[in-house]
Length: 328
Image 1 (spheres, rainbow, N blue to C red):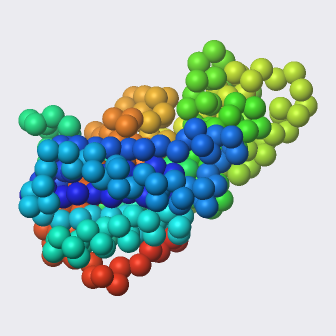
Image 2 (image 1 turned 90 degrees about the vertical axis):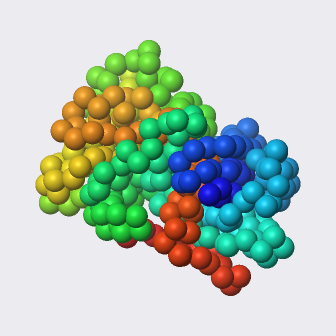
Image 3 (image 1 turned 120 degrees about the horizontal axis):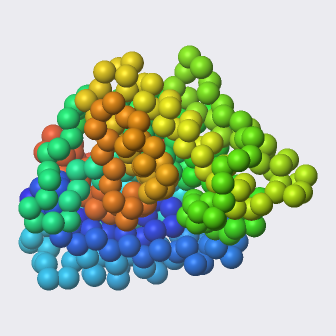
């Protein structure tokens, strides 16, 4: 069964074909990073206009070598995300589904990130490797959520960020340090020549599975504005502070809940220090998608859509975008 996935929740226009919820047949992503870098962050109106320009060429590229008779369903992200960007993807998916008489499958962007752990681009890849119950850490520019997954479509939110998400904190820290946008890769690159020697705080929020990174960002600002601080050392210290909190709190929850696995997902999951610390300290197996599947893509949407379709969860033509959609 082949599903065409469409993703336009933020600033990547993406389309992909995934077979049987795991094997990637095509995966096309048109990034807008170069456009938004000059502004230091995503400009919603600019993003939606770029989606309009890119969506048809991206879908055509993903469909190269295939006809619509080969496709069994259209999966599309309908939230959370930027309203204007989401509308481009949802309306395009609706039009295709109606014209080609294919099932339309609305997908939660956060759930899709989790399903990146089911993907494999090789024809004989390791599939069905996820074991329930598992603990999912979704860390991206807009989200830092800890979610218990008991089965397909069965989610319980345990914790969330109370202020800045981890990716958002990286973006703001990079701006403070003059490292540019996007902040995550910039901080990671700068940290390689530095040492995590600065006294930055960790918000543990004892008794809660929630996260908080706003105070860490403010502490960095004060250190930098005092002067005499190496940018590389500041980047390394900030990165370690974020990683410490994410790893320790997630592993504590995994032990408490006695889960079978930990699943990482979202753009921040591409951070090498984060993955290394999880692999070195977790008492249970940790699944981590390759970096290109951690960031926004349509293959994860198609994979998630496959399991929705298997469960008979099909959307109607009245599917609308939900910018503040949550999971669990």
